[in-house]
Length: 227
Image (cartoon, rainbow, N blue to C red; front, side, top):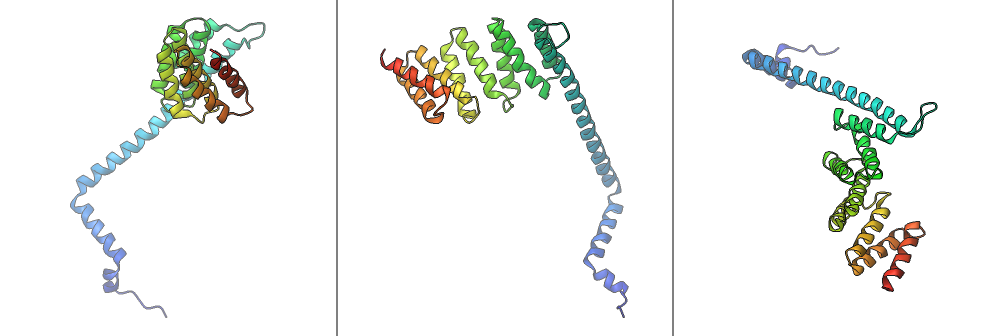
């Protein structure tokens, strides 16, 4: 037969003692406890509200981004691509929904359209904005390449070399890293640094054997040697 628990046993029970102490504390500090609970409720509500707001922002940015892609590709029946209108749509996504994934994609496509349209200064600003806004974004190397191409087009070879070196230090394993290495070597050639160019071309051959980058790097190494 089970032994009946006496009041004395309950008093010795650690859990019961903890519950009793908690009850006494709450009674003694009722105002502070209520205030803390209010803060917790407000914090939880704010977090939930912010999450809902962010979700709505992402959804709206995604819809506008889809429209921009459709305009760029001319996906409407009987229409052709309209880069100028697409540029405006991408600008809207980036300005109306900053820091969203949609804005992240919009900045990349916007920079490319600006560069292809010969708007080098605008492209440089857009790619720089991406790298500032999304320093750990999904397309940092792509944005860095775009920035370096714009700098190179403006004749700022030293700036292009610095940009390429920075993104390779951070994203050397990115699938596009080979193109970044090739661009850096080409810029080094333009800066009259043949030894540095040869070193980078050699890295390409070592890191990407049997690739088009390695083939082109070998061609450039032979050309640099004969200069």
